[in-house]
Amino acid sequence: MTTLRQAKPGQTVRVKKLHGEGAVKRRIMDMGITKGVEIYVRKFAPLGDPIEIMVRGYELSLRKADAEMIETE
Image 1: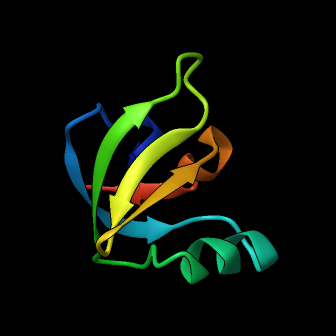
Image 2 (image 1 turned 90 degrees about the vertical axis):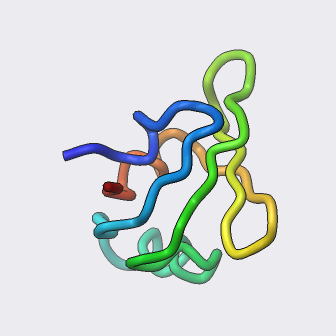
């Protein structure tokens, strides 16, 4: 299983499945990250957290813990 956290800057990945439950999963989905959507990984912060991504035409920053819940292909 590969997650968004393992993606490299400049890579485009597709969401396969969202893990987690309750409010955390709902918050990720509210940001536009749903099954099948493509995510472009722009860059990582100097210490690796957060991750800057581009999804559905807008920029978004995610914590590593949240990125770990997003399974990609």
